[in-house]
Length: 398
Image (cartoon, rainbow, N blue to C red; front, side, top):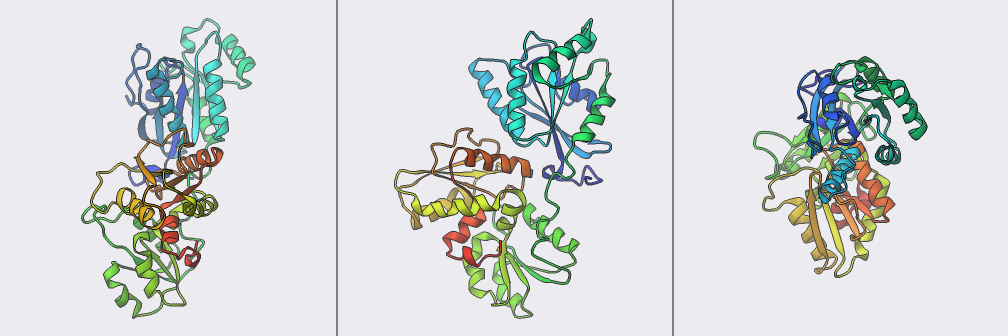
């Protein structure tokens, strides 16, 4: 089902199990009990967990997982609203949810959480925690059934009871895979010659390749393709040997590579491949066309999945804004967010341009696409956008 080695499994390919519930429902204690170690800070003080806390762990037979502790809901203060926003963002990356309940007078907050998880089509296991404090936990289970229509698993994190039953339910509801099986399988077959054009820009750590390049190379090798890797300045020499079946390039050098591409070779980019692998390619293709409708004063949001220190020539903060201002309108307002800082309300924007999302799992990227589509805001991807700006989108193999 999942990779065998925890240490060799990137976060984006691990099954993310999110724990949600009210403040002081015992989410952190439950995670610590499952992990068998102290992952999250436990305290009787309400609201101890303020930001999502994640822990990579191996759970048999699920394989490599991430246990995600989230801030408790039910606090109506301004800080509580901020915590709720962080919790909703954590839902976007969750493959499998655990709704942690205790015996309360009402289940209003739990109903809101359940509705949000249902909207995201996230498989959810409900647990009634802290049963060691109840005289009659079976009555509490009946109350949950009546209020929410679900039957919770009775658990005590402190006494470590009910954990086996919880694991069994997690196994039953876990998705078969957390990502599509292949980045490149729809474009190659055995013995195809594939040329990778990989300019090593300042974003790449010295001595290493960036994650999309590594993923694509490994996938090509798994498909028994004949792989050649060059930097952009060696493209002519690489093409003088034999025409490749496919060229995969960094989107930033699309025009250069297209100008030298032999007629018989297909062309795509790492970012375009990730657009299909992680996101919604049809939504991206529809969204990119709206760039030509932008006018002065319109706001465009550029979203980067990872947080990094901006460098000269940064693609999201420099190159894409420059293209928008040069080719569309110099008075368009461009804003950049990174990491988890993706707005819940996208209505102020006329277009969202998202990176490939190599650091996110597919559910997290699709949740962002869903948010944009539901709010009627066009969304596209770096690679699709750069191909459109280069005037070659119709020549790129999607």
